Length: 58
Image (cartoon, rainbow, N blue to C red; front, side, top):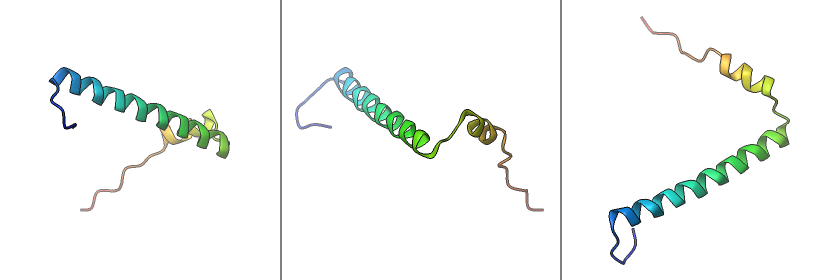
């Protein structure tokens, strides 16, 4: 990952920190889009209940 040697534990700590940063950025972006588009809990519920399977070809 970097040009200096590090233990697996150090490498995992860095990877977790990057993952947490990206996760926070994603949460912020999703929140922004939800507010911008006026998406409601009702809209999320409709998506959760939506049938998305494609028919099986025979």
